[in-house]
Length: 408
Image (cartoon, rainbow, N blue to C red):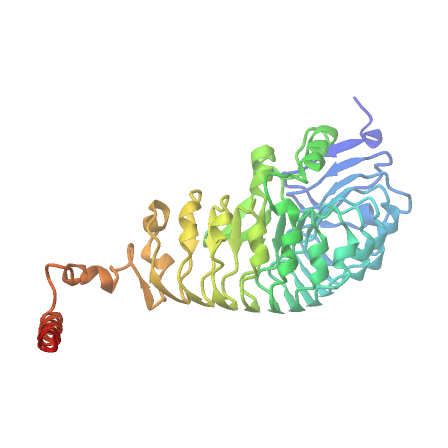
């Protein structure tokens, strides 16, 4: 029987283990304890010896209380999953010593305090998920300098305030940005065109996930079994990306969600450069002005939600070119005019366009000009007033001609 204490990988995930996490695994590199009922992590997080762990999965357990400040013993750690527990309090400063950390998921807990300053030292991060917590304060200006490799930044459902710092545009490897359900105000920075990984078919995260699957026992970082869920509000309800990552899956992870905040101003034209986006959600804000005329440049969009803002003007005709759309919602704005005629736009339910008193055309009732089209004047059907005008003009021509002849 192999010596379990000298194993380099142990997978006890998806069982009914409970109580204290066992200790004594001196050479362990990969530890999967997710999806159990463990409630005490002290033995594994605060051991007196330097840990060789690269992967630590403690997600979906019953851990509670503040996170121990013992992370200086985990300098080899690459992937840390603590999501879906009952952790609370502030993030300890020693998290900043994890200079090799690529994947950090603290979502679905009750962590609080401001955006952790310790994250400024995590320069190797590819993925940061702080969703569903109680974080407050501003998104720091240094975020654009912290990790140039950051591909997924998920801060949804917290209590962040203030404006979106323009420095965030320095994260040109971002494929997904989710700041939804916070209290963020100000305007959307036009510099978001710098999110070049959201354009085209570039897959910045491909090499990282491929390496993870090959090197970490063939276990993908995100799969149907794993507890990591990149939760994004789109297609009108919350969905979770729990798919095995492949070329298709990676391309799917391109999204921009600023919904349910207090953003104002216009939709910046810089967003038109993000041509690889699969979903765009700016709903439930205070945005005004027109929908950009060239929004049809976002030809890969599958979901577009601009509802519950103060947008005016027409729905751009360029949207008929976005043939992959499965969901559109522009309801509860001040839009007007005819819905552009195109197979996709007419196929959506009326609720997608409701709350815009000036909008008309299928699937809404027809526009007034359509109902009176049979009464449009033409050469053979002029109004009585037009005929009277023509008669007076004819009479003046005759009188003018007679006067001219009398002078000869």
